[in-house]
Amino acid sequence: MAHLMTRRTKFVLDEDRIPRAWYNIVPDLPVAPPPPLHPGTGQPLGPDDLTPLFPMALIGQEVSGEAEIEIPEPVREAYALYRPSPLYRAHRLEAALDTPAHIYYKYEGVSPAGSHKPNTALAQAFYNKQEGVTRLATETGAGQWGSALAFAGVYFGLDVKVYMVRASYDQKPYRRILMETYGSEVVASPSSTTNYGRRVLAETPDSPGSLGIAISEAVEDAATRDDTKYSLGSVLNHVLLHQTVIGQEAIEQMAMADEEPDVIIGCTGGGSNFAGLTFPFLGRKLRGQADYRVIAAEPEAAPSLTRGRYTYDFGDTGRLAPLVKMHTLGSDFVPAPIHAGGLRYHGMAPLVSLLMDQGVIEARSVHQRECFEAGVRFARAEGILPAPEPTHAIKVAIDEALAAREAGEERVILFNLCGHGHFDLSAYERHLAGDLEDYEYPAEAVDAALAHLPTV
Ligand SMILES: Cc1ncc(COP(=O)(O)O)c(C=O)c1O
Image 1 (cartoon, helix red, strand yellow):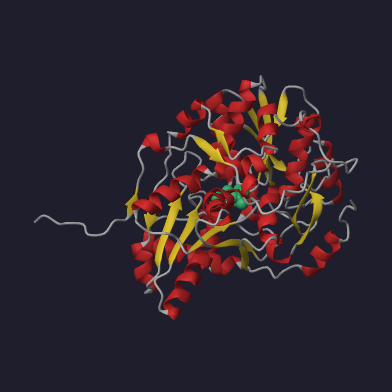
Image 2 (cartoon, rainbow, N blue to C red):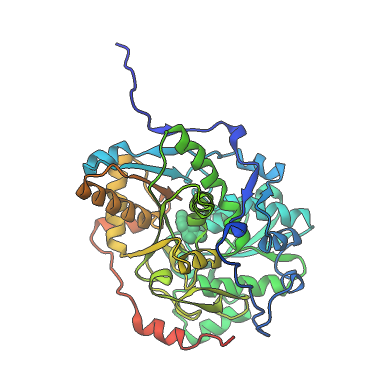
């Protein structure tokens, strides 16, 4: 018997709808972004300060005031391997929660690396290749960014060295193997291959590592070799810019669903998947064309937006990277080894911090165990196993859906399911066995780290 589907689960765009330009939020901001400063002199950075680390095209994007930046055709072609990514209506999760809310999620786990990270990795590899660079150095927290850059490196023909945070290196051997399969070299950070890594190991031989430490190692690597540039998977303006393909597609897909979101949610480590989904919507909000509540979901173990200070700080622990104005817990704060390795960062993207400071977005911090519970609930309803990072967004989305039930309101909720958790099964195993810990907000460690803030 013919069966007519009366409701739609997936909203899928054709390949020619891959965006042609990235959206730059800077001209729509209520105030101008404070400039990055030189880590040695404390003076505003000039392009020359960044050339040892980045190709000129990316430096240009970092400081651009243009509303749109055209996506080069070879990058769009690479995007076509997995973009446009699908938008789903979470009918089964809605039913499981018995909520009148309509829940949508943009699924970035369809990329070869399994997350949103290739959106910028491919662009960065392209521009480096175009300017004659042959090797990239980077850090990775969860292993997702390292996998993305390893994939982008082999796609555009660049060697890649990845400094993988020790805690993740031990938790996720298969991420390392994926990166090595793409042809990259991977070491656990702190490593003995850089001066900074050796210094950390001498002081703390059993250091779990952190993104801040791994960034210092990768920056040192790039700054001390002529053939190498540095590549960062989050935080910087050009990284957030590249991620805006997510939100631009989502705007079209929400229109296909004939709905406007009331609430938009993303998890925040350095802020890139959050910005990628929300900035195109926030542009509309800032231009007075629409209104949304926008919520950043962060871990209680590294709550930079909810508990950090909005001030100039170093982006890395070794104090080699530029000073940027952001919400920070102090650059030598090492977050507890939660399984959402991509969220273990002391700072936040300056653009996201500015929006928080201006009251344009909200933030909420959540504990590890309630996030894994939300992740399991989501997997049992929708089938997709989320990476530990987006379980933070799922937890907040579920809370919002339950609040809508309480209020008896049909709210529309959109969140970014920015990666799958197929390489995070040991974390799920520990969760299912009841072995995962919650880490209380480490007030003393944060106070100690904030006492070392630079004076500018
Ligand atoms: C799947 C996933 N989500 C989120 C993040 C956090 O980064 P960001 O805040 O830049 O999206 C990471 C970082 O590694 C990640 O791998």
